[in-house]
Amino acid sequence: MLTSFYYKKGADLEVDISRQRMFSAVADKGGLLWVDLEDPNEFESEALVEIFNFHPLAVEDCVTDRSQPKVDDYGEYLFIVVHGLVMRQHEKHKELGTIELDIFVGSNYIVTVHKEPLGGTAQVREAVRRKAEVLMGSTSDILAHSLLDHLVDSYLPVLNDYEEKIDLLEKQMFNHASKSFLKTMLQVKQDVFNLRRIVGPQRDTLYSLTRNPNPFIKPKNLMYFRDVYDHLFRIYSIAEAYHENLNNILQVYFSYSSFRLNEVLKHLTVLATITMPPVIVASVYGMNFKHMPELQWPFGYVFALGLCAFSSLAMFVWMKIKKWV
Image (cartoon, rainbow, N blue to C red; front, side, top):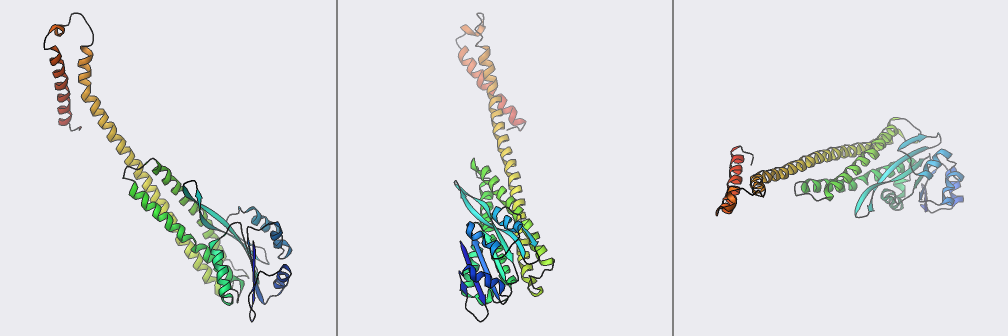
């Protein structure tokens, strides 16, 4: 799906313009063109080359959709690769996923490419329809900042979701955790690790964008990009704290599981030790020798039972004295 906006001061916002109009908009330095490609087909992807004449390497990164966060300066435009977060339903639970957003920043145009719907991009589209003069009435870096800012803001609901999951794991840890507890915890730990792996390079990308001078971001607007970088830095710190917290939960869980296992083994050992004397007595009188004094004794059965009970009681008292139970 291709969505396009063109705005020039003193004129109305033009939406979904034709290719011919895009050609003229790119040539007109007095306006600002934004083309958003969401899961583009082959015909729509050709616009990247026909209209904007982007470098084949940049176009290939858009098509493959597997690039790491980065900023490439191609002279006539900047090529920025960032990632949004999404929670995808997988069987009975949700897993963390990413959506790549490729942004071309020219002097009078912005082109965005993504394979799946992005909430941040949709919000910017609605904002442009409402107040085009604010986002598109100035230079292209203002619109690029808005896209990055909304993308980073979309991380917060995902972070809140994982905060609730971690709190729930902490509460369930000592409540006779079910068999799925460890599986859930490891899945959350893997998702948080992926979150750090995504945010870390993206933070570095924003840092290089604010520190390396380029003609597409005005010096007076650098503070807005630094603000986005600060948000990413804080998100990365939160992800680090989540990862450390999960490591602590995992260590405590294994320690608690070992403690419970030791308690069970202790009880089984005590039970086996207490029942050992009766087993010995029963095995002695089960030898079936012909000449055993107690075989003809009227009180032999009672004596054997009493000996079993007395020996077990004596063993239990001895273990109490030793404070083993």
